Image (cartoon, rainbow, N blue to C red; front, side):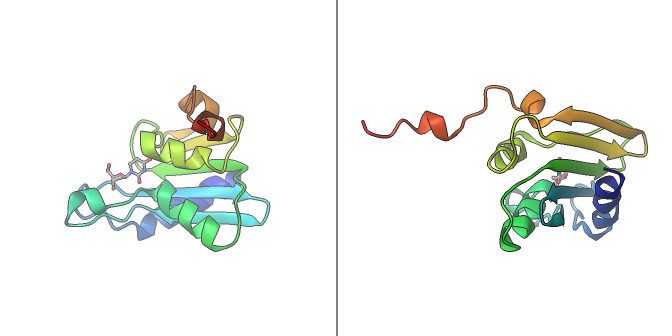
Length: 130
Ligand code: THU
């Protein structure tokens, strides 16, 4: 888990966050290794993307679809957790028990995806056949 947190810390340095000034790094542990992403903002604000979204895209592009652990690093005094949209994106590839490490200069707070996204919308809710 130390490697995963360190990967999130390091990729944060590549964030493109000139509008918020809030750089974030994310790292995903998978069976094939660690995949990372950082937030990439845009002058058209809604077009920016979160670090977690970038890490998921890198993971899928590398041919991986199984998330075993997540680390998010921000240089904030309090731990920050993935936004609602990213929780749902993580749930596409991560089980509810998957650890999510909220890391920064304050240390590391460990939670799970299930705790962050209870009652998640999932494939079983699609209700096909009507
Ligand atoms: N952000 C992330 O990349 N991940 C999070 O978990 C929370 C927020 C980004 C989005 C935006 O670029 C900046 O942080 C401020 O919201």
